Length: 313
Length: 234
Image 1 (tube, chains in turn red, cyan):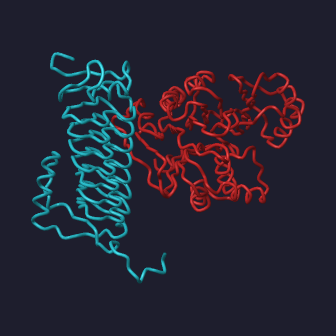
Image 2 (tube, chains in turn purple, red):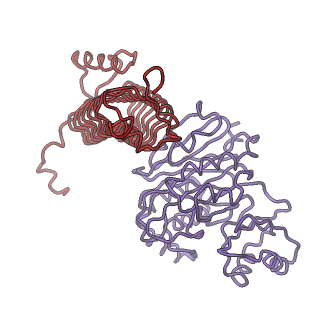
Image 3 (cartoon, helix red, strand yellow):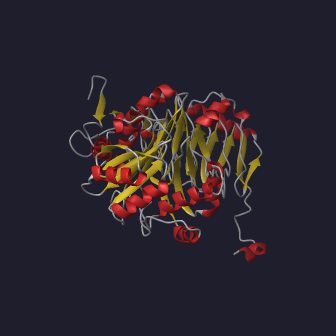
């Protein structure tokens, strides 16, 4: 959930996967009340990962967050100099999304060398991650979540009990392009898993247990495992109690540990699939009264993707 | 109070604490005697109508959060929506009906009374139940009736894996399929006495279904006593 010494048991998570493309323009408008409804579970901070349209010309989106005032124009000038091309960016509260050529190493180097105060929240063709401290309703309105469009999203409301409250500690976490994860629960063997991953050459931003889960799953995928297989690997490797909601370029997945003590409820209609820590977060979705509602089983991977939907059609 | 003698509490303007205080007979407008209550705009709030000790009739007009109707005595509570975890936890008597689904641990450690869930119940339904009767019209999740000690769990749909794990003496009736049964839980004979008891319970719960269509599960009583042959396992 948070820092290594964290013993908090709260936090709220939500996820929404749009099946009917006509609802994609309403993604943010539908996600906002879900996130706000989870305020009591996590009033300290909130964050969300939005899977929106792909930029043209094979470019990627890099979302940066600043802890204070940022000079985004000078960041843009540095990118243009290093990447030797004109670039575009847009600012949302303390974050900015840069649309750049797909040169991840050069981009990371530029930020590390010239703007070490900035934090990369996400990189991907679709993914943008926004997260900050404050009540979920304030965070959502600060970033304009209401107007965001896309095919799917996950979100988190945080209640820190012992470790710090900061944007960097907030969820979602991204550990690979277009990969995001939110977590309700805590891991007991994250130090051991982190050590193993460090030996495999994986770098960490924090001592956060959720970051270990995100990097472990991303690492398994980098070895050629599918998302479903990487999540099954996680069941064997990660000890603790957790409900994860995971976003990838094409889809959305939910996983609970084998005891399944952390809450989770899923709902599905012909138009959408939604997940939340509590039913009340789903209660305002259109068509909820006829939705199929259930609690996911322990140690079972649930996943939806546009690819699966196309195959089923 | 409205014309029909119903006390109305709107949770958009009153707190849950105020609701429960009034139902306990405290404060201005508190319930002196059993009466009818309507709770508006519950929005899935936790701990609605808990610890009641009078035979109130409480109608919750929407979704309830965790521990709705916990420790209930005498009162009749109806939830016109879904319920979060721990519905009717430690219920002593009275009745709770949920028109939607219930989350984990419905009726946990309940000592008496009746809980009826019109939809599905999630995992650990009736965990450690000690005398409550629980009737689920849909299906129940894994580990239901875990360590159940007394009472009856009736499932009109299916029961997921580990049903009745480490059960003592409660009776479980399932009409649909069961997953792998939990440790020391076995299928048992359905005698005419069981059929008669179950018929009455189904009628009380408003379920129109023949008792003969259920199978009965209970304790094999193999975990009751220390077995010297298992000493090496400890």
